[in-house]
Image 1 (cartoon, helix red, strand yellow):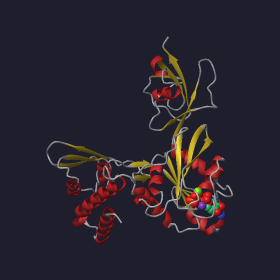
Image 2 (tube, helix red, strand yellow):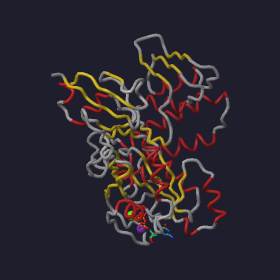
Image 3 (spheres, rainbow, N blue to C red):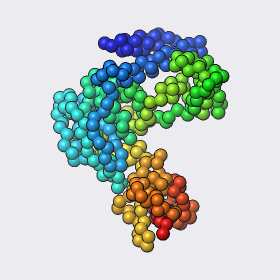
Length: 369
Ligand SMILES: Nc1nc2c(ncn2[C@@H]2O[C@H](COP(=O)(O)OP(=O)(O)OP(=O)(O)O)[C@@H](O)[C@H]2O)c(=O)[nH]1
Ligand SMILES: [K+]
Ligand SMILES: [Mg+2]
């Protein structure tokens, strides 16, 4: 075992031994910062160390967005890819049937969704076991992650997978922390709060900053629920926030009572990939998580083209983004746009290129003559 992994284990043990209370808060914060630094070392080896770098599989992105299938071996990932995309990925009852990344395409609501089948991961994947790093690095590039679970296996598998992804900087179903962190030249570490009820303390901020050898910084907390983990995430800076669905497969093999329990869990979707049960439900749920925006183009004097929407992502959906998706040169000739739909105040509204579009808006671009 590498010394880094040994150190990580030691700190995790010390954290487990330490009671959480006001007096130990700062110390725990410091331990967490140490842990975050060690974990970063683990997947970003020192220059010259060679090998083991956290690189994903070399599959190019196609279509409008990407969904990754992540799970333990033999939970049914390949079966699901085959049923959803009609692509062939080998299915077998033995573990590690899939050894590389197999892409497929789903056509849904006018969007082309790339679905990636990935090899199964095992505990310790993030530390280099199996092809774990490659799998998780590829998962990092997904817009939505489907965590596939076997309904016949213990539900603790959910936490194990989450832990592997977490160790690689992937935060599931979480918004980026509402916290601003600014380094400065002098004045020490200070903290300000924009809301009441913040539990993070100045002392903890100072201890964590000290661990990172940051002597001067302003921490601005914009939400009461911000924790010391969030501060560490912001300082570390390479975190990625991805929506996820826990797909419980093989429900054909469990009882109705067991199904009832699963149904109550948030972000869950019970399916049987093999028997194609609830695959439509899964697609609907994934669509919601993808938060894509469909924009219909309307040529002058003609009906909008409802068959081929331009697909934009929620955080990039201005008229400018729309133009760039149609043709790179369109923006040069852009005069204004006419918009119909929920983002428009009138029918149509005349807007500039910074206007933010909503799902199912209709847009007509008027060019300079
Ligand atoms: N009962 C039941 N069995 C299923 C279902 N989906 C898949 N299986 C079976 O589970 C086994 C593993 O399926 P795979 O699709 O190969 O699983 P995988 O997750 O891709 O496995 P690896 O590539 O080895 O990680 C096969 O024997 C499948 O027939 C299902 O919905 N119900
Ligand atoms: K398998
Ligand atoms: Mg497989």
